[in-house]
Image (tube, rainbow, N blue to C red; front, side):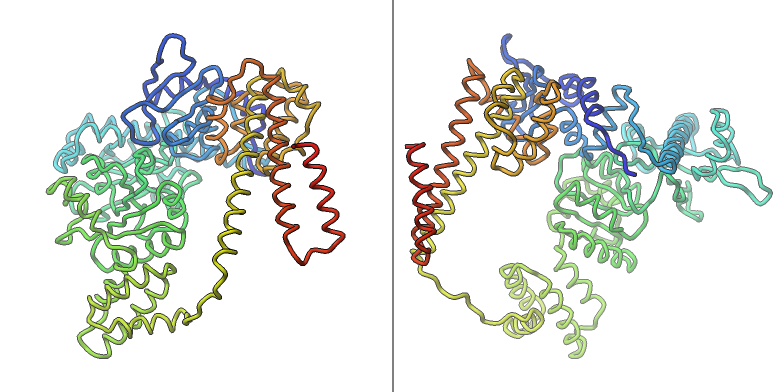
Length: 595
């Protein structure tokens, strides 16, 4: 059985986490005027110079007039930390000392307990490695030599494992951790004699964090050129390498809708130190589907920078296909002279690296280059084989304008006829010169105008319904009057029907219903609208009279839309006499009620 958080728990989390206190941890809030009900700041979700982000303490909501994002404290943390709604619930529960249930499944409860204890073990180990680094020269000399500054060492939690057999094991045992949990953590293992020894010795240490910033694993690098160069944590109940990305906990805060994926820990660290904080690394060469979904969740475009060797190119190809299939825009950059991003950015600076990113090759360009590099296109057979591959790549482009542009570009670049290349692509796509039947432009225009008018009426109806819901949640005292007039069936917009059922059910149980509750019920698509309506439009001298007026206005809009539908239906020459009489009767009733 999955974990489910009841409405009571959500309400407790909302009550214990004052939105002003939480938001103030991210931005500086100021009050405009002594009598103002709002606190203001520059929005953390988009760039601006003049504050348009507001927090309303009395309603425990936020709203930005610039980007139209709004919600309660859970929604704010979810967006500010770039984490899921349920991760935000867990974070705020921890912040306020609320113990969340782990579900009813005993195996699930046990897995959660083990995972939590392994993370505690890892956290203690990270502190141990950090202290070792600051108390010994070996590890620190390595990072100084690589140009890593103290700020980055601290923020990334870098450390050093002593050149001893069991120093970490003795330290963790002294903290009360059992041998069983230490072996499960992967930080120690048994030698041939059955003695427990440290996995890492005389290595600089890179803690691996999950998206929430918890230590879930480690990577350890030798200080010289000995082998193996890296030793990484094995998979554990707390760590599955194909589901995580190194430094994603930092990169998600960059507010950049583009992420750069590189191969190594030091590549990421050097880029972050240079101010390129949207860089992450795959924990292994090949990108997995799970990592692709994680990237897709936090960005719109992914830039891949893998090594130029055969393994790196194949890994880039796999990553491109995974990300493209998930709907991400993807690009590939080649660092000059076969250098890795770490070497390049330290030698040339962030501006030069950003220039490489801007000039990155698209998926189509990279695939063409990849196939070209593996085929001898100087021979007729080789060039024909290459053009076959090129046609297949171009046929995969769904956008016809984009496909035509690439056909023109590649025909010039590779010295082939544009017509011949277009013909080969058309054979693969099965497209012919099929043109849609022409329609009377006046009929099309009239229909389009009716559709626009109907859409505008539907928007007005939905807005009036939202106003009523916001007014009820702002002032529960008017609910008994509203309930005597309407039920959730009165609402037309499907989302408003769903929300009204929750709001009415909560109020029917004599529970207070706040704006925070409404934003919770609204979901991501409707939160911004409700937050803005609450702040700007639900301000009346008499809320009872306002509710009555909103109900009346919404009904007028509904019947106006129905009147227009009837008039359009009656214009159909094929309509039966009985149906026409029925519509005429309905139309007379509408006119008599709403003249």
